[in-house]
Length: 151
Image (cartoon, rainbow, N blue to C red; front, top):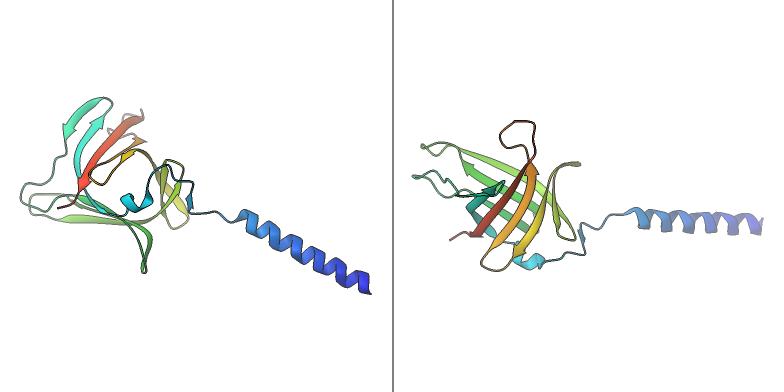
């Protein structure tokens, strides 16, 4: 009987250890300062397949922006606000972010939506890239976003 209880205890400890190993760390070995990421950013420039453009904000509206937050009530929250026309109608997107090395992954629920590769991140500048078929020609485009803190 004693061996039975020892066997159960060993199985219980092994199962707990395996569960702990499977847990994903949402901020895993970042190659940049997460504290610098936690900010409100406005789009400044965009590079599409090597062609550089100023970001086209709606002239009579606030600037299009995105924010990385990690506070109570906004745990690993990414939010984006874009103005879609000259009467300032807007779209808001809210997702969860996770980091692994130099990749920021954005999730809607459990579904991964997109990966951003951080190129540089300082207090004054955030540059990241992603792959997306922006012109719907069935060819993936390389997009580089240049952002500055929202003023």
